[in-house]
Amino acid sequence: MKIIAKEVIADCPGAKIVKLVLASAQISQKAQAGQFVVVMVDEKGERIPLTIVDADSQANTITLIFQVVGLTTKLLGALDVGDTLYALVGPLGQATKIKKYGEIILVGGGVGIAEIYPVAKGLKAAGNKVTVILGARTKEALILEKELKSLADKIYLLTDDGSSGEQGFTTVVLEKLLKKDKHDLVYAVGPIPMMKKVSELGLASKIKTIVSLNALMVDATGMCGCCRVRVNGEVKFSCVDGPEFLADQVDWEELEKRNSMYRVKEKHICKLKF
Ligand code: FAD
Ligand code: FES
Ligand code: MG
Image (cartoon, rainbow, N blue to C red):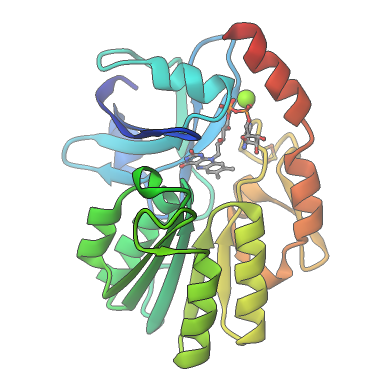
């Protein structure tokens, strides 16, 4: 759980993104694409889920990439090389089904780019043709561009302000690609409105579309019920049944409501401490 390396990979208004390499022999041996860990920065802190972006079973390390959005990510981002986390649990969640599908489009929005990276890597290694669409607010916040360029067959970059790639939304490019050619799978991680739109486009094109949901989690082992989502009319626990689900089966309105449940409190706590 010791921090072996730290890099601030983006630091611009509205997006501070930090990469941490942590020593964890056990998790690094077991981690698979699509899984996550739960981190506690200190004894009295909350537990937050973060995707395992990379795992090196030779070096016994795992890599996390997170955006500083509130109290816990601020505390985590303030740690340095040599510091130790209070607790680290994982790997958690169902792994991505890595197999040969054919032609795949992966869509990553904001820090969701970090979450599609291990999946893109696994799917490429399984012999799929991989197209990646990345979107961020601005050039500085467009993370892992080099890494994804080197593994993707085709890559599209988009920014809200046009400072890198095209100006606009990932979903506009996705819509064009789905209309133009046949694809076998769409996989998306990003803000809820983006994933919801990707889901509509996948449904309209009758293409299997998978999303990895950022539902609120507490214990992340299926005990508290905090992460419940409605999928195909049934209640599922995102931490143990997910975090991936078929996009067109997700009740997006309910997820949106549940995810904003503590927003006022979160702002309040953040102001108190910093
Ligand atoms: P807060 O101010 O407490 O919250 C800010 C927002 O973060 C909230 O509105 C809510 O949307 C979300 N959030 C807060 N607490 C939780 C929680 N306990 N569980 C889930 N979401 C929460 N973020 C990354 O930057 N990189 C990742 O790789 C990543 N992977 C994730 C994987 C999974 C399976 C899930 C469920 C979430 C992931 N997240 C990731 C989101 C990350 O957990 C939140 O950004 C983090 O918990 C925010 O905590 P905070 O105290 O700094 O912010
Ligand atoms: Fe508690 Fe999933 S986080 S059941
Ligand atoms: Mg918090």
